[in-house]
Length: 294
Image 1: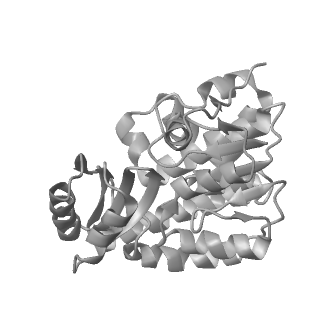
Image 2: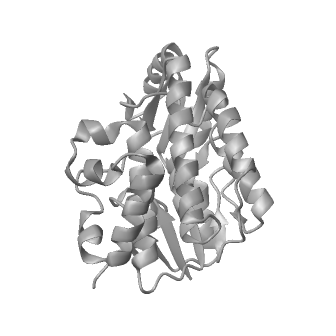
């Protein structure tokens, strides 16, 4: 069974999607449509901007979404048996699998990016990667801190990202190191994504999601909030809303996909981070990057 996976924020690079734009008329049409929907030429930033330009949340998220979804739409053999996306990538997976239209998917991603940006400005907050500790130890330390600190991304065994207030994350990093973490590394991000500090963004995005039509996807979508597969549109909406303040259970998602019969994983979009995370769960599992050949 073929599993397709879609990356999240952090996978972006200058030049992303340029080859698709140059090689495929359909890719050009969708890219120009995106420029109109967004009200600025995001393709100019994707193809020829600076790393700094591309790192802005309101650019990064739509850019990764566009690269992933346009690539899926021009692949001649895109026929997933199951799909999942990491954080932002969940919107790409849903759009590629037909649950969201291209226009609605892009509008939701733009709304999500803007809502998250605003939430970051309300309260300074951050995230940190914890390497070399088991999930239970990380969860236990987070619970012992009086400030907001929560597990945010269960990326693979031994790699968990935590999210919270700046003072809470500083304290957590000290305690994680004392508990034997190989590294407790603060990340260069705008805020505490996938934590209760994103509540303002969740409320704002909830309105947009509730008013968007979601169809039944062509395959099961394993959603971040509980790592389980869904095809029911109402349940998908509910899980998308919960995603902003809940954790990304990527380790558990990969495990569930393997249990359900995945025989290969294809990453659709920029980079190959997710393939590496799959290999950490099952070293022998075949992985590949989707590529478009004329």
